[in-house]
Length: 106
Image: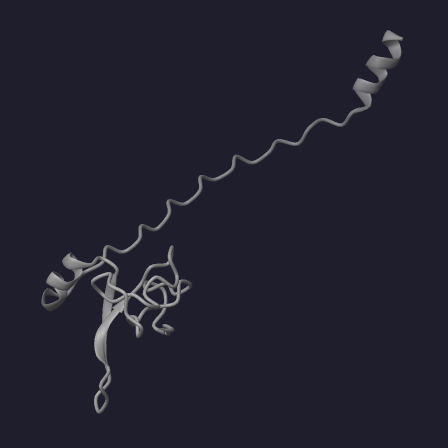
C-alpha cells in the first residue's frame, strides 16, 4: 500500500510558482463638498441642501435637497421639515452628485 501512495505522489507534476499578487490600489477618496459662501448658512441649517435651481423667466428659484437613504423625504416636506403639499425640489436617490453633470430632480 505504501508503494502505491508513493507512486501516486511521485506522478503528481510539480507545482508552478504562483506570481505574487499585486496590492489593491487605494480607493480614491470622495471629494469634500465645497459650499459656496452665499449658501453656507443654508447648508448649516439643513445639510440635505445640495444646490439651488433657478430658471430665468419662471417662478422656479429654490433650494434642491438630496437624501439618498430616504428617497421621497421631501415629496411632502419643506426645507424646514414641515408638511407641504408641494414639497421641496429634490434629487433622485440614484444621482451621484460627484460623478455626473446629468442630474434628475423632482
